[in-house]
Length: 247
Image 1 (cartoon, helix red, strand yellow):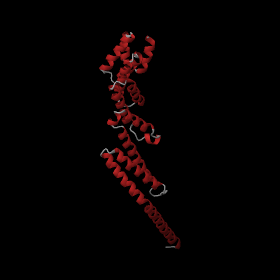
Image 2 (cartoon, one colour):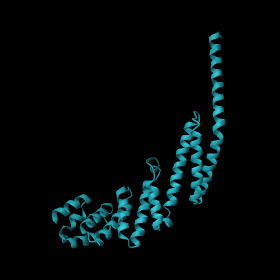
Image 3 (spheres, one colour):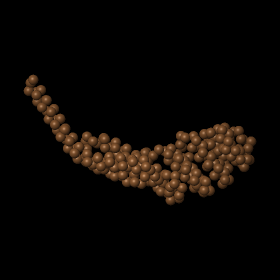
Image 4 (cartoon, helix red, strand yellow):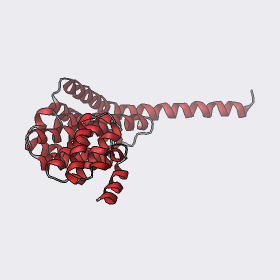
């Protein structure tokens, strides 16, 4: 073996030794912090599983704080792992708070609704991505339905429209939302707007008997019942144009 090969081998061994030393140094510094973070995360998940959301929240915050402290050490070998762990814990933390603030009992009170809205509206763009938009729409629908059952049509209308604006890909949710919106508009004698809402219901459920009955009532109030079959087969946009043409 020539001297060059020997030198190359010795250089590689030296590099491996340096790498091991560097890795062991980083591991020694970061491991205690990660162990605390992991322990807090496990405790948070346990409390969340028991629906102790407030207690879980405390542990989630501690886990996130410790993972961020680990990142402040500027790790090279643990960097990707810590980043992934932070993302995972924030996801669980945000959803834990969402489940807490959006629990059925809390949403039945005005203060609970206020806190839920403050929470969702206070989420950053990086945090809102963790919330399932269907779950958010369902919470809005629940709030709206509570107001509707309590006779507060204005607040119900506000939250039903939040659901509609989210354009959920769940036909049953869109159907029920536009049916409620139409009923509220009809009760306020806003027959043209109500008519479009009932047409919207039919766009998701052509056989919806309730929507057809309400649609007929709107047509009679507007004195355009002769156009019934056109409205029954129209899209919401077509219904808006048709109203302008026949009135």
